[in-house]
Length: 348
Image 1: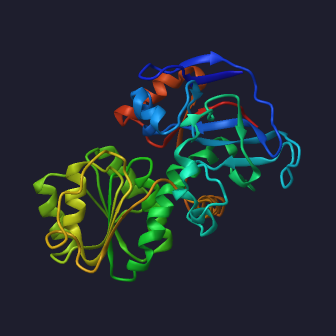
Image 2: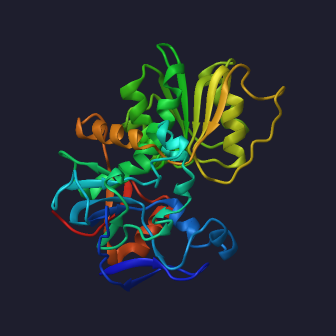
């Protein structure tokens, strides 16, 4: 089969031919319908060997962690799925037995440091191995070609929104910084699940327009001091009841913390490498919370997919063939996409 693989550290991935995986006991092989692309894929291509090896990643591996498709074959002992079933593959990997997994915080499982598409073979291939049925989400009506987008971008943003929902009663305001692949989902969840006024900040006018189309009440440009003044005017001197930062650089973190009111919540979701520069007595929201996390839980993913299958959120994608993958990543990196980039591997 064809697969888009990292063959060496700090080297561009390549499209190569490899063997189709065979399932072992309790394992499932999925025929990939579509795989969504993520900015973290681009980060992996420049990751130094010392970092990758320190966290247990092994070369070579196939990229891709937003996967939807159909059950192709099952190993001994597998139950609950049948060949031909439409499924989405969990984006984060988890063990299912540690304290975090047992308590429902499987997105914090240490086993998930490596997973499909990040240290192990992922879904930018015609077939992908899944370690257990636990990591498969059945699909009822959703097209597997686009369902994979909900396992990371869709479910991660859902997790962030779910964390702040207790803050968002009638008459409240929530700020979404960054209206890209994750932030645009967050806008939709906030409109469906809360009565809050939704305000979006993004440098890209096309993304601001798209956020308004998805239901945001207002959209502001930039993250400079002018934006900070406009934001204070928009949310009031006390600040927003919740701020979700889907960018995660120094300037957006500072803007978001500064816009969060006492008793409010600031959620850092974007992996932009920024730093929180403040102290407990000056700048943090008094009586509030500041949180971050890595990816969604299984429950988040199931709920995000359920909202899409109920027609309550849109899953807009830009489709590319596997031979167009380099062009797709260029469009992702330049911000030229409208929806989430999906590499279509097979049609139903």
